[in-house]
Image (cartoon, rainbow, N blue to C red; front, side, top):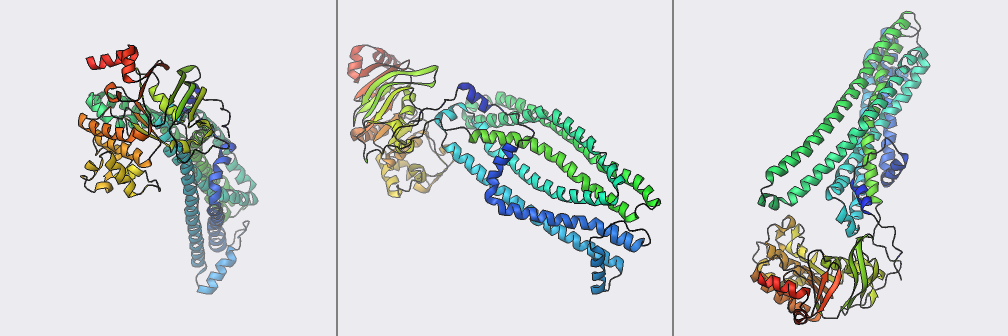
Length: 623
C-alpha cells in the first residue's frame, strides 16, 4: 500500500541532454531491432511484400536473358557458341510460337513483354504491401509516442521545449517511414543483384572481375561521404528544431508580439535561424549530389569496360555476343543497388539519429513513482487536507518550500497569498501530485496522497487556473471534457450555476457552438466562466482557484465571486490571489514568504498583527 521508492531524479543537465540534438550513429542493430517491434503486428504484409520482391526479381533477371539468349544468340546470330544458360526461355519461346504461329523474333518479343508485365505487377504489389506495413507500424509508433506524452510528469514539460517534442513526434517519425520504405526498395534491388552476380560468374570470371574492381572505389567514396556529412546532418536536425520552437513561440505569443511591436525583430530572428538551416541544407545537398554524381558515373564506366573487354572476348569467340550483351544489361542491375545503397545511407544516417531521439523520449520514465497497491479514496471526501512538515524543491539543491505545516478543514476556504515566487502555485502542483515532496506528507482525509493513484486523486480536486485552456470542440464538450459520466444536463446545470448560461445561449449554436483554438472566439471573462462550469460539472470535493479572477472585468468578477461563495459553502477550497480584496471573506489566510509559512489567520487577525499581510494589504489599497 505504499509508493515505490523515489527513483534517481532527473537533474537540470539531464533535461538539457534531452533538449539537445543527438548526433546519431551510422547504424545500430539495437535500434533497428527495437524499431522492427512496431513492424511485427504488420508482418503479414511485410512478408508478402518480400515474396513479391523475389518473384519480381526473377522476372527482372529473365528480361535480359530473353534478349541475350533467345533473341541474339538464338535468332540473330544462331551460329555463335552458346555459353549462356537459357533458364527455359528457349522452350517458352517455342511454346509461344506453337500456340500463336509467331515468327521466332515476334515470339521472343511477346515473351519479353510477358516477363515485363510480371515484373511490373509483382513490384507494384510489393510497394503497396510495403507501404501498408510501414505506415501501419509508424501509425502505431506515433500513437505510442502521443500516449507516452500523456503521462509524463509536469516536470518534464516544465523543462523540455515543446518544439523538440513536436519534431520527434512528427518529423522524426516521417524520417523513419523513409527508412522502412527504403529498406524495402533496397531489398528489391539486392535480390536480382545476387542472382545476376551468380550468372555472370558462371559465364565469365574475367568480365565479372572487371566489374568487381570498381567496388573499392564505392567503399572509399562512401566512407568519405559519411565522414563529411556526419556533422552536417546533426546541424540540420538542430536547426529544424530551432525553427519549430521559434515558430511555435511566435504564433502562440502573437498578440504580445504585436502589442510590443516586435514583428520586425522576431522576423529578423526567424530569418537568422532559417538562413542557418538553409546553409546546412545546402551543404548536405552539395555533398549528396557530389556523391550521387560519382555513383551515377560508375554504371557508364562499367559499361564502357564491358564493351572494351567483352568485345575482345567475342571476337576471340571466348563468349557469345549475347553473353556480352547480357553483361552490359546486368551492369545496371549490379550498380543500381550500389547507388540505392548510397542513397539509402543518407536516409539511414538521418534515421538512426531520429530513431535514437524517439527512443530517448519513450525511455524517459515517469518521475512520479507508481503505487503498487493504491489506497481507494472514500466515496465522498470530507475535504480535509493537511500539509505535514512539507518541504520541496524542483531540484534537490534548489528548495522552494520549507517545512510547511497547516491544515485545511472540511468546508473551509483557505486563501494563500504572498510575494511573487513565494511558492503559492507550487502548493497546487504538490496537492495535485504533479510533483512529490522531498520531505513530509500531504494528507487528504488522513490518507497520504503518495498511496493514492494520481488519476483518482485528481478526479476529486477541481482546479481553475488563470490561463484556462480551451480545446477545439463544442462548448458542451469543453465543459464535460467528453466524460461519459457527465451528460448534457450536467453541463447546462453547471453553466447556470456560474451564470455562464447567459452568454452561452447567445452563441450561434448555443452549447453546440464550436470554439476555435484556445477559445479565441470567447472573451477572457467568458473563458473563465467556462472554466468554472467545467470544474463544477465534475463536482469535486476540494476546489482550488489559482488567480481565477485576476484577468476579468469587475462586472464578471461580481458574478464569479457570488458563484464562488455559493460553491465553497459546503466544499473545501484553496484560493490563491494577488488581489487581496477578493479573499477578505476567506475563513483563514495563509501568508507565504520565501517558501515558508509567515502568517496564518483570518483577515482581521492578520491586519491587527501588522505583519507581511498587513503590509501587502496597505500597499494594494494605497495604490
